[in-house]
Length: 304
Image (tube, rainbow, N blue to C red):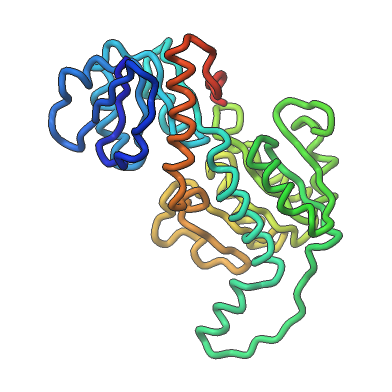
């Protein structure tokens, strides 16, 4: 079985695959080798490498499985032929993204971005700040990243409300949002982007939140109506910390760059040095399961 990976992957990460697995490389520019063209299993690169991968897909006639190193798959789904098995990387970003969320919440509640701006202006901008203890945190989307975040927030003695596409024990469905949002001091959006979540969070939801509630977006920018978000911030209905936007990158002159009570990071929550170490641990497990004919983990259905 031939495994296709991007040529930039460190050799140490490609050791220890089961007997009979050969590794072939997707080069940045050079033509694919004959071995690469016969790949059955591919690890999809993202960023600049994804364009090369998409261009070569029609030539990979033996390809059966594509494994991403991202939890979200909206960027790759439209490019895959019907019948291709796609597996996401749910789980590998739990630690860095949950750490980013905790930092985002604490930094906003303690007003760190505001004090950083004052420092640059050499202003001693004394003011009172808030406590996280006793707050109510609402998760919008309750998967492995939400669970990891909940674990890290639990020592702060906060209350949790969990909302997801499918209601289950301890988790509400989307239909309950209107009655739950007014209870939340912090709303953490972790929704993946699908046709069903396109601009799911809009003006009516921001109006239902507590005045001045903190909205943290570590999901996808397109799950939020950006015009409604901007208006809600201008009306001081919500404060925002976001790692994502729509469009992305955020264009010059966009209101979110300069509105008060907004702090942005450039989609870096999962970008840490251990990304590929964690990702290829999953790849090894998936390839071994494929070789043994066992069901794969994280198979994407209905955009999730």
